[in-house]
Length: 474
Image (cartoon, rainbow, N blue to C red; front, side):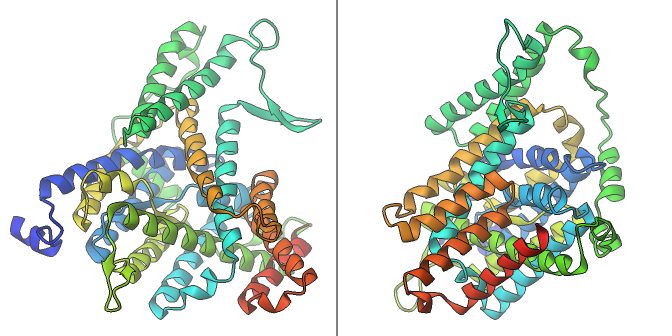
């Protein structure tokens, strides 16, 4: 068995061992296992959707996708539900556009199918080249701000205001606030600071440990809040099958059982069949673009960080098994839609395992096995408070805005579409609108500068689709 594993993953060729690959897999798992809690918590914003159901759905999709990445593409890269895309699913598709949870899963399914077809046919560049590079980089920055904003709202640090739309929650212990209100805010800030310190020290699993410390602080400081424990639901079931029951009843197969019934969307007098068609096309397209840009960017980043590039016959550096990696992502996304969660994407946290020595698909297999074990911990994971996991959301937002350094902000022709994309994603709470404003400004600037011929046909098509989105949704 040991020799079979060594031969299949070519451990000798890459100068690694089973022990090294196991430790690399453990490192990657501890770096990204927070997604189980964070994703389930984000999906809880959809009425009637229990934490346990999405926790199990996320785990199964992660296990399946990461196993595919290890066995098919043989790369030390894990995948799971993408942050940013899941926010798009919940806050844009369900809460803004008015689609049901099951309807939104249809978009995920279509995303996976389109992505798979484009990968197998080699036509991936059609969508990849439809957006200018400045906008594709700006999307990541905008989503980073969006995720951080969601984290600050979920913990209650940023609140609604009738005059300015949003404002800072009160920290005034001497007047408008009390310790019970401020304590979670303090824990979020402490957890975030600890997380940053861990990362600065090079502790790759810092997110996991910071959330664990934040959770401990929350229950410890709860002793200082009157009636704190009386108001908590600490009836944790040690039977993991309860969580699987929620998953089966609330999430599994919803995409086929209820997904293609758009009666709820059409029941809103402001919606019509025409708006349904336009929003359906543009939302599906947005899912596919987000998935593709995210996955390709992560794949290039991981391979660069780990020196995993191989030479082709022309002597050029290429990603090994690129099509197999993209096909693994696409298939995993289809599986995710059936399970009941949003698009699967490659995780940049995989670089932590790669830096620990992971070089082959065996690292991914270890990650998948550890997620299988974690799948049975849903009741315990539900005890992690928002003030702990929201620190991770804010941190991920910080990581995602780093790509702004790659933008040429001195050239207004490049900077303006990027700027519009970045600000409109968090300001409108809608990734589609951010892309639309970026495209709108890009096309208009090109036309007024007499450079209309530089605009690609695919860009014109996507531009017109997103213009129609404005016309039919507002």
